[in-house]
Length: 427
Ligand code: GLV
Ligand code: MN
Ligand code: MN
Picture 1: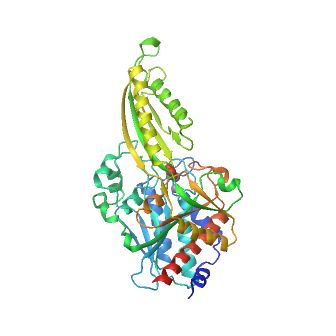
Picture 2 (picture 1 turned 90 degrees about the horizontal axis):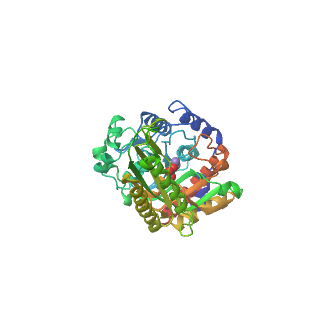
Picture 3 (picture 1 turned 135 degrees about the vertical axis):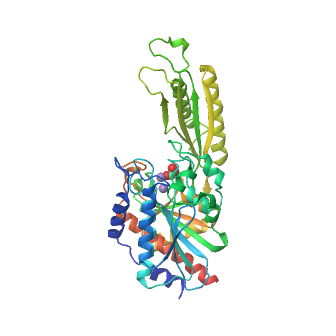
């Protein structure tokens, strides 16, 4: 079979109906309350992985879950022992999330598998469909634990060192849902077994919508450095303590928060994004001066040196602010991921797939982190974005049209088939 024929036979149009049903089923697996809450290494996340496993087992694929909690389904190719072409994304969410972040890419993987199996066409290479565990850094700080384990950069002491807001370490959370953190090294993927990985994801921004484009071809993924900052002041009576005698941890924190915005918007930080997303105030009483405050800093950048420099600069300046106010400070790095440039040949493959399907496309960069960022340590990695309505994400209002996910999945299958054909031509 020629490369072109292989590509077109694998790529039959994907219907939006199945995707909608799956998105609804995953969304129902949530803690009660607003939006979807299905945190990494929770029982609900495991239930979502079971749905993924059920769907792919029903298609006749071999399915397993590794020690990090990633679920993988394999469709063997026509060539025995052939390397793998993969796709997938994550099934966990931030608190009070929408229904699409990560899930769209997992549904695309399921529908890609369904399309290939039902077409009767068999790839030459092995195709793998993946649901990664614990991608969101919202619970433990460090994002992408499952894909970092697949990349071979997670060790058991790191899992002990990260804890959620309730003090539960990642090790404890993993054990509680039946995983094996002590054996996390076994989740490492072997580069030699891989040809390429392509992830579909919602854009989480407005570039596609604003340009009336259906397909985003990602050329770079932003990095992030995350800090947990603890300030120690003196709690005391709000009526009895004169203003000049205070060591108010929250007022010091407020100066720090404003500094973050000033630094991120100065002339030397074009494109840097700094956010304080969590701020816990103790004791949290209307009549007590805040004695302790803990807050998080998320520094995102496409320039890896500037990302780390900015985190250092903020830490230094926070110390000055606290010294002037007689407030103690302790800073811990809880997450650190470098930006990556995605390989141009896979960008080209995805562009060609969009063109062949007559879908409007454009190149863009990802401000958010993704599992693909980690998988790019193992194999050539590409990303396909589909539009986010109003650019909203990490909120219950997050929306992407099912038809756009289906179109993105068409591009995904076509791009995977093109990689398969290229490899077949060389093998
Ligand atoms: C992942 O959603 C991130 O926080 O970038
Ligand atoms: Mn995501
Ligand atoms: Mn996310």
